[in-house]
Amino acid sequence: MNGNKLSGMEKKLMRAARAVYPETISKGEMLTQAEYASSGPTSKAFARLVRYGYLVAHGSSRLSASPVLFD
Image (cartoon, rainbow, N blue to C red):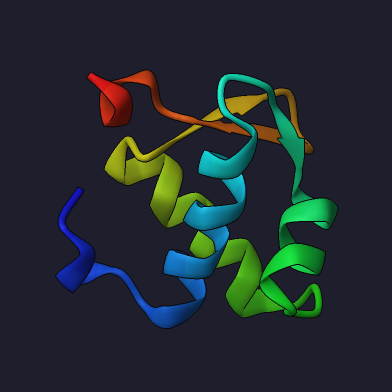
């Protein structure tokens, strides 16, 4: 994972997802753990992390860290 291209918020969101891997985590719980409120920038951060392949979407509200991060 190229941490240099991730914002501070994205790094905190990834820490929350990695902490529960291989389980899924809700976006709301990720935000709580990362100490961010739901807003436009957080929605964009989730979308970027999925697009980068760091997170895997499970429906519209749950995510997991990508298994490739643990190989």
